Image 1: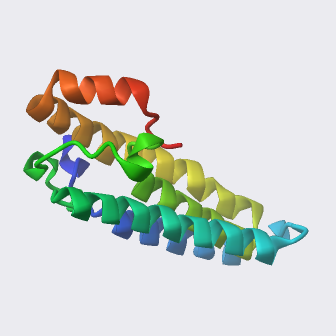
Image 2: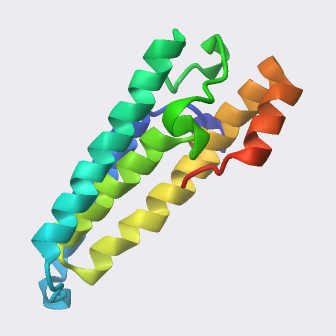
Length: 153
């Protein structure tokens, strides 16, 4: 399945899964959940997601490296400061939290299935190929970073 590796921008994957989550929720409306404080939880997840995405993008810009996830070989340096001290993929974690916020708003149990699908897809077709490119480019330096910092959070 190499044909999907680094081919679809992660934000598009997030949007597609979000649409599928909504569609599934409309197909099985009887599976609605009662989630106490759902709007507050959704807002917290949403604001946290935006903070993670922005922190990741800003750290890349400050380091002077590319934020284009489709061409990891164009990376000029390994970013290890800021949010990248606690997550190798804060922007993807932010996308996941945005989907969690959406699932909370939809409050349909089936919609929550989109979350592990997103994680699986991102790991298999985006993150692993990115990491392979970074290992090829930076070798032991990236391997050491990856051993000390978690992939997601």
